[in-house]
Image 1 (cartoon, one colour):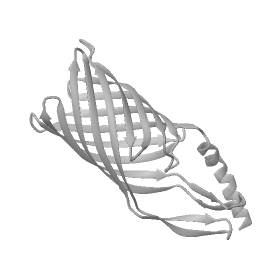
Image 2 (spheres, one colour):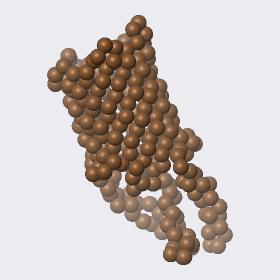
Image 3 (cartoon, one colour):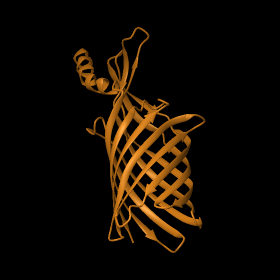
Image 4 (tube, one colour):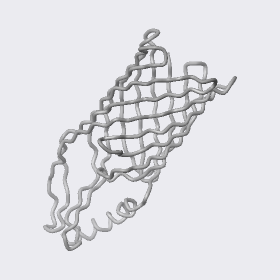
Length: 246
């Protein structure tokens, strides 16, 4: 078992160095479809894949359904559900003397996410300004995992308790409609609040509309984390998306 302990310590050396980095880089890929039911109602579906650890590690798979309804001109109500399949990062604990206590490897687990949002938009010339207020509720079911106990030199089973979280996401966005151009650039800032500011996202990007039915998007996003409850680092993100409208 002593050989096992040294082997595990060597295997953990790389993840420990990665966790010590101040920021990370990942790529987010998404593909979706949107159907206009009538002049006021539209529905959609989307799948997404995210990476982390300088895009070397799979971070999340997800799939979701959404609906949007135009209440008034420039005012929309939307709701959605997402099923998230997360690659949770490893967790290491230490004894009071600084020695290793136990190590829980990374594991995959499900989360359920619901949201309701109200979006107001205002057009000024070629500029379009929008403010979206979204309430988000996420529930993580209980999950059985295993961890290695260094004090006793054995593997043991443990349970990650279920967890729920409410968030208010406030996003301010500005878009610019370039005359006689199919590419629309935009910039936004989004705040995640749960009694206090959790994180902030700054995004710049552009959408390319092709033949009215196809929309290809590219963006860069910087995510600044204020609360480290989940040991999440600041992150630089490159996003690639595709949407089909029919």
